[in-house]
Image: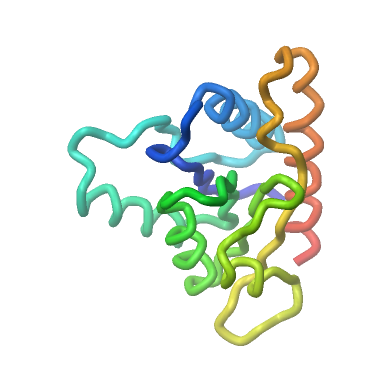
Length: 157
């Protein structure tokens, strides 16, 4: 199956954004290689932001087949709001998070594939996604494995 993926990641609360930027570029490239369309493509909050940005994100999420979240627990990032939009809108959600990271309570409680009236499926992939300071050559396999796991889960829904 191919479709549209909305790739959500923290933009404003990350102390060192460069490794996260690289991981998101790699994930996006792997999704494209698998035939998926990825949005949004920006890596920073547009200067005109505001309500138009929020409305665009909501429309983008609801128009997607999958919300892929690169989690950053402990931030005030809007990625958790985007998870809520997807869950309420019936869009399956996959959250990439490090082992041991505490996710927001409702995100952890929503995890599962079992059909629930009014709640989309949510997968939490526990992987050391933030250990991206290694040389890029060592990271090439990591996004492939993560994307494969997420797309295999999505195809089985």
